[in-house]
Image 1 (cartoon, rainbow, N blue to C red):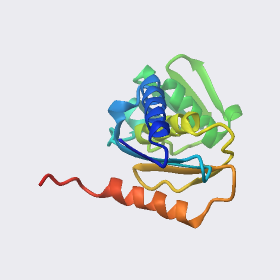
Image 2 (cartoon, helix red, strand yellow):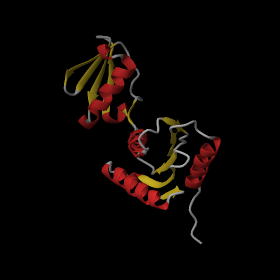
Image 3 (cartoon, rainbow, N blue to C red):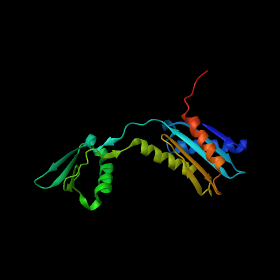
Image 4 (cartoon, helix red, strand yellow):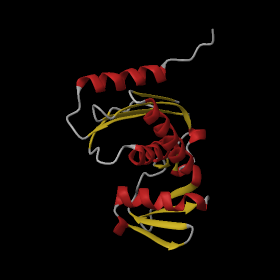
Length: 188
């Protein structure tokens, strides 16, 4: 974790703030490295966080059985793992409409017609982690910095924030942080 600033005392304070927020959101085990730039004179804040690899996404067929019953013209989903039930319902509501998804009992879901939903991603740990990191960033960004530019790539979440127009040099600095975080560390 590296914080760059023209104000050494401010950098120490921001280091403490960032560590506390990440700790509160239980993110340190999920983060590989981080870079931040704080410049109160230019009214600029840049942060880039490299996420650790997560487990692969979960599809519906991994946590439930999906069958089409032709006589009733109904797709039936039998839940095997109740832990994913909220995720399953949310995804089915998104793809088929809430009014078309019926749950007659705790472990059974019916949908009128034939639906190919076996490969539907019901949980994506990488996206969940990314969402939590964005939550942390929005808590970390100084108050009043309403203009933001997201330049995230792959497993690096990076945001530039200011209350003025975003300068090209800030974008270049953020891009530099992304390159740094993507460069494998070597031990000499």
